[in-house]
Amino acid sequence: MNETRRAVLDALADGPVAGPALADEFGISRAAVWKHVEALRDAGFEVESASDGYALAGLPEYGGAAVEFGLDAPFNVEYHDAVASTNDRARELASEGASDTVVLADRQTGGRGRRGREWSSPSGGVWLSLVLRPDVPPARVPLVTLAAAVAVTDAARDAGVDAAIKWPNDCIVPRRDSERGGDKLAGVLTEMEGEASRVSWAVVGVGVNADVNPDKLAGDATSVRAEAGGVDRRAFVQRFLERFDELRDDPDAILGAWRERAATLGQRVRVDTADGDVVGDAVDVTEHGALVVETDSGREVVHAGDCQHLRPVDGA
Ligand code: BTN
Image 1 (cartoon, protein in one colour):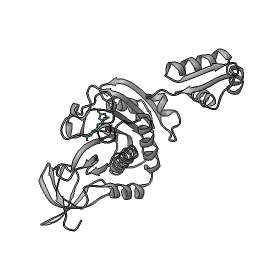
Image 2 (cartoon, protein in one colour):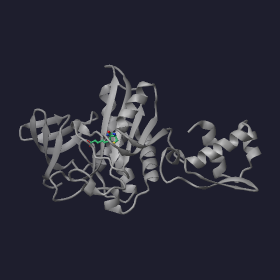
Image 3 (cartoon, protein in one colour):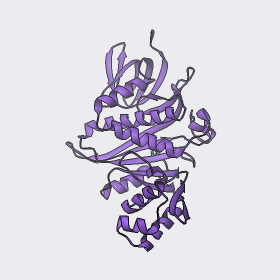
Image 4 (cartoon, helix red, strand yellow):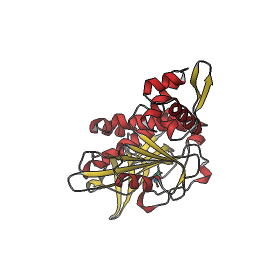
């Protein structure tokens, strides 16, 4: 949303305010005020017009303008009813120079997960990608992914779900009898471009099974709707973005919060890596997002793989 339209919207929220007063305040014509009001109505905002002026009477349930309104974090939101993959669209925007932009969709037709997997993305989910330009070397980008995992877990908890993080960056609802550690609620897929010393851009894709039926999803999945009843997707996305923004430049806070929310730490795990299985006790995560596993033959630091929770470590 452009700056003037956003300012007009804020004025309407504090309204009623007369058209001529808005025109004076923003140095635009009355016709331009009317155009902004009509565009806001088209975007789903309910704008009442009475003798004492215009006033905001209702918000759209979801969408870019709805998320930007009242958002306490510096992101522009581009919304699509349907898109192949928000990560693909975010990569395009990144290559055109965008920054602190969020691509948000109601549905994806070609959603992508980690390790080249498909990601089911029916209507009702929260499918989004952040375009970021962190001023860090590529080795520090995993911290951004960890921050996204913390932020999505906190948004899920606020929505009433008993969520935790499973290494590397899955948000799950822990279940005692599940080999995978629990049912998957959300996942994070980070992609980037840059040189050895500096990242040019990073795209952090986050998929949350929000207002969807888990039967429509692959594998052991759950959703916010299944765990907590309904979900306000606008509030969910705002909470996620605000929490991410709070954390993103604070490595100690990110690592501390990740460790506190991690269901994997303290578990006996089997990690399926490209070099074979690593079995042992998961004891920590590094600032590079790697899992530290205490095995029978010593400590191993695992950078990538699929993790199974075998049982809690004795005494944990
Ligand atoms: C995982 O495998 O756990 C990561 C899943 C990431 C899915 C999200 S949905 C929004 C964004 N767009 C994509 O195509 N993928 C990510």
